[in-house]
Image (cartoon, rainbow, N blue to C red):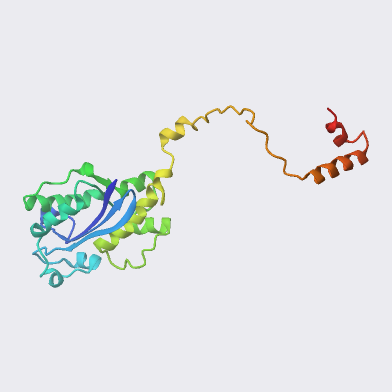
Length: 231
């Protein structure tokens, strides 16, 4: 099973109001294990960078001015994600921006059904708790010390570790599903044990066997060994 853990950075909160994507980072998982394949792209938003957004991710208008615009990287992005499920923290936010940009570039949008929202998973598992990415890192002991500012690729790598913990740790396929718990343990097949086709050979020498017989004789007829030796 192939999954893509994904994160974006933007100029703000609302693409309909003119906010744009400025960075995409993605990490490939295969059967819940990172493959080492990643996608990372800075994007020229062709607009100013609000101070609030700059404080979050540190990407200035000057830094982004020589980067490609989204329509020029859209196909490479779509090629990387393929038809895989996307794993995103607060998926509605990132999907809103991705689909706005894809639509503007004349590309097909990504159905929301293809997004697995780790924020929604965390809220079900830990209702009432803080479930930001940083909070989940603290909960699971995931090292996020390098996360001084938001960065799409770094956040994707961190989210991949958090996601594996959310779905059951490093070996998620070994966790019990509700169905298997309800069904109870699988029955153990019965097995008939018959006599050996040939007796096992003695593991003692003839001298040892004779010494044992002589020792039992010294104990007298009332000893348990003597009683067991009788036919």
